[in-house]
Image (cartoon, rainbow, N blue to C red; front, side, top):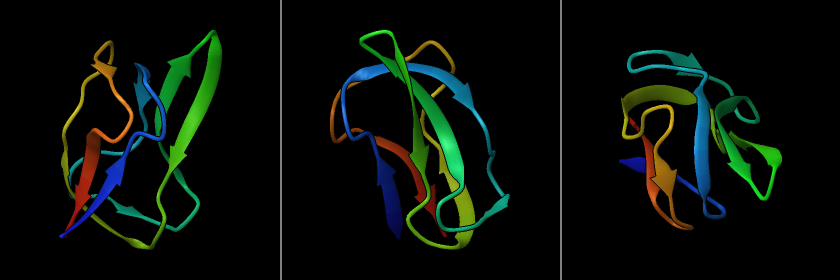
Length: 70
């Protein structure tokens, strides 16, 4: 199982893809806000999302798992 992790601490602004959705490498899956900047967290590979581990408004730390892939 592969995971998409937060590259920095921040607040989840938006979840752009849900469980069961196919995403392409480079596609933004999560939007984080950190230091008043919006930062897209992009899929590093093509694949199907198994589970989204965060919700809008959650605070995440660097390295936290945001999404798992099948």
